[in-house]
Length: 457
Image (cartoon, rainbow, N blue to C red):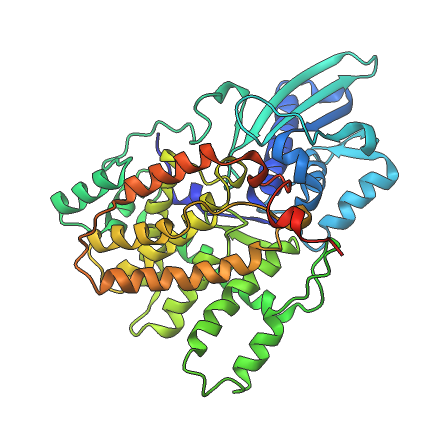
């Protein structure tokens, strides 16, 4: 299978790539399919069912809103985040949906949008099924989809191969393991980012790749700035206060000027800003998921603002290196919290940021691989137990902690030779096996851990 960096990174809407972005894309695909086959005009009602983790925590993750917007033709990249809540509320109160943005049908949310808390579809914990009916009540079409992490969506025909994008484009430097990636780097005398760039050229020109990567960085930077500005409490009922604006004021006012660890405070701030925006349904870059969206931007901001010689070339190399590492997780394990717990989200992002920072700070390919291994090794076993089913506690702080951890991992590797006992491949396999052994109550169902031991206020 062939994965592009632009598959792994995508611009979307919070709070969850698998629970918000994926369902929106699936709903739109369903309606687009009806339209393409000339069946949309017959449809008078659409019934949507969410299963597994989507059903268990879908309300807190905005899955219901995402389904409504997707059925109305919106995309995570293009939807107006300022009006999305009002759009969904309007459909609920008027009992009408505009399928594809034009074809009006009846909509009764209690009957037509069902979340099954205890039922699952067979191929993946994040399953959903759509039914379209005509005026006589006859079924026009039924189709199931799976949101497999990071906003990736596959349909029911992909059962058994549900972790990767079904793209068979031949790559000039194909790799599916860390060992293969290192072998290519050594044979071709290339860095990890250069290998990734060579493969990206199959789909895009150098100019398009560079502009695309810098656009992703601009969205990350804008998200951070938005997090500095927006005050108040996060939606959802937990009344979690936004901390980024206050911390930003303290740092820029000079209040913490004599603190020798203030750089750590800046890194924490970058991550908090992104994940508070994500929790509010704002625009973020999935990297590789929304729940872990703050880590790559926080570490990249650290590079830009605190590493001497940082420039746009380094930003592009950072994102390409991170993508190469993320692909290894996507192809050999999972980046879905509903499948392997938070080790697949925050753990994968931490490894991506660790290796990416190591490269732009002068690390060799073996040091990059070592940094990525350190990043995931110390997140193994991390559970996904969101309080109230919201991407807030412990998710927001967890991104800040992992961002600092990623920087430390890169520094540990840079201060070594790259030689180490545990390979990245072994760590990824361990993460996959640990996820399989993990109880389902710790996989984004809000049935265990902090989710049941913290009283919702």
